[in-house]
Length: 246
Image (tube, rainbow, N blue to C red; front, side, top):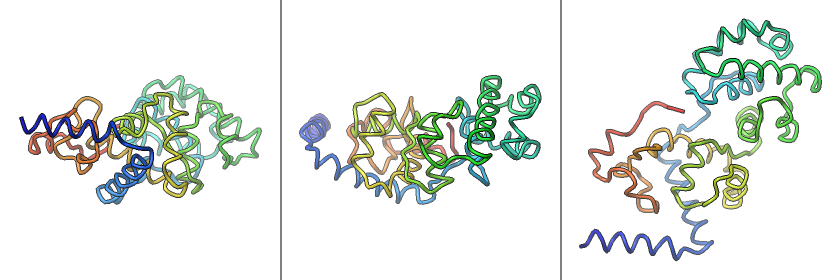
């Protein structure tokens, strides 16, 4: 009976939440995420904006670890946009095949390389408006590059980000652009990039799509979705992933 009362009280608490209360809760949760994942960062390996751009496009429908195993050979052979734009597509396909969807990805990374060569003097542009004109580059990819290669604030609304913020009750939106706009209004710009990393890390490590580790989550008290996954601490701890899975 006590559990049922607690459950009802929890539901009412979030149901009656004001906008100010939501923002305060979201920022408190961000601080908890910061303490939980102090090393949160982009998990794609890169040394310059071009490498990060290509790696991010290649990361669709695969893991960052798989991309990191694949890009060294690609960048060793084709280190610049000029090089990749002029490559033999079949050779590129062979190199990046382990990442999946290799034909579509080859078309995108060679196309964006040609666009950078022809329209931006061989340099990756540092503006969102320019980045999203490149083949295979949407707002998510553009914000990754802006935040991690150029130091410009951006929210990376990938699958993990969207799932976690909806479970947190920060938004009910499904459209990534609307999610980005809504979450952006709750945090200072300076927090956007690191917030993205923390949410993505949380989605990869604890707040999984199928069985979130609710019983081992430091955000349990502030999360309206607590109980979606196992609440027993011992069971939940076994679900925590130490490594990243995209």
